[in-house]
Length: 281
Ligand SMILES: [Zn+2]
Ligand SMILES: [Zn+2]
Ligand SMILES: [Zn+2]
View 1 (tube, protein in one colour):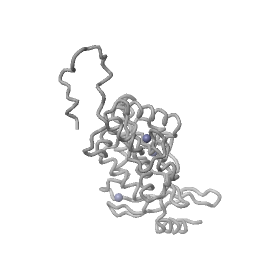
View 2 (cartoon, rainbow, N blue to C red; view 1 turned 60 degrees about the vertical axis):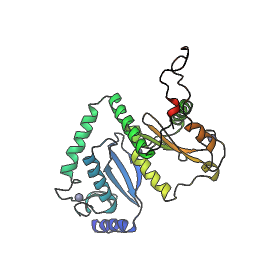
View 3 (spheres, rainbow, N blue to C red; view 1 turned 180 degrees about the horizontal axis):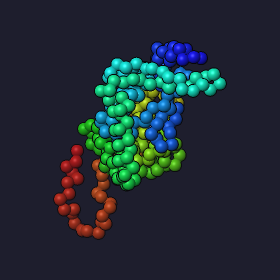
View 4 (cartoon, rainbow, N blue to C red; view 1 turned 120 degrees about the horizontal axis):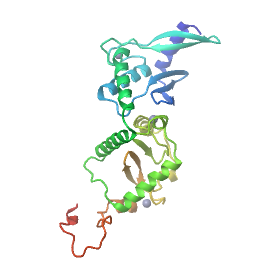
């Protein structure tokens, strides 16, 4: 297959509108291999803690690779053959973004290098702190005005549940390469995903491509009883975030106001000073 045929094949690929599939993540976590039909593309990963500008530029570049055209500067995909292995050309597809396009090499790579250099200078503890803060913000956005659960019993269960999932569920390549980011899981799926992979997974759920068994679909994540209809469940501990479903009994229990705090010894007599537990709604 010559270059002209490769180009035609690539054009055909884009016109078919095939869904891109993440194939692998490099050990460093900096690059990803994606397949669209028969073609493989290597693109920079989007770091979970990228600045807004860097994230935008990387997303733009990714979408341009997936669609063959940049939505910002309008550049279209070009192709250079850089090797021939057994008469199969290895093509380097690139998109000649305009120099003022955020996705252009000269704009994106200095930002990306700077990002990884800054990250390399942080301790794991600092990175985990950032990851926890980002996870908390994400959950707060999802919960909206709902009152977060503060039930000690439930929190204990949630922590144990997350610990168990850390034992038995595999993480995506991005999490393996960089643990200090949000770990997401949908209990129906049973694997840990970074924000990016989780967003793609949720998209497949929305499209109805991820199907659970009827039994699993209606089994409470907490008590494991088959009890339709279930209510949505969201738990977060540090940088770990799990979505699933609970039966109404477990859900009600988890929403109950906390019992008097058990962390302090109960030796003090009399009423608790300034107790406002009744004011809780
Ligand atoms: Zn562009
Ligand atoms: Zn991932
Ligand atoms: Zn239950």
